[in-house]
Image (cartoon, rainbow, N blue to C red):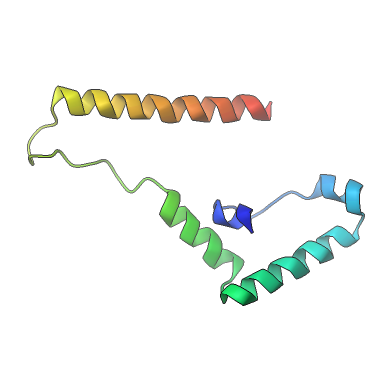
Length: 95
């Protein structure tokens, strides 16, 4: 269920076959169906809610309705750098 809450719409299970055999898919499906019924949602509902919640909603508007200040631009650049650094770390972990 955590994958759905992270926005996943598809998860690869190949490795799970090695640990639990072909019954793994049925067990996982049954567990997900039970959890989803308890919440009254579909997998799609869970994934869409998470994407909406976790996605960037748009750039922040300047505080005074005019042009952004240098301080705001620096703050936004540092935030962007932090996000890119995290993305780079995740990418390197997957290699």
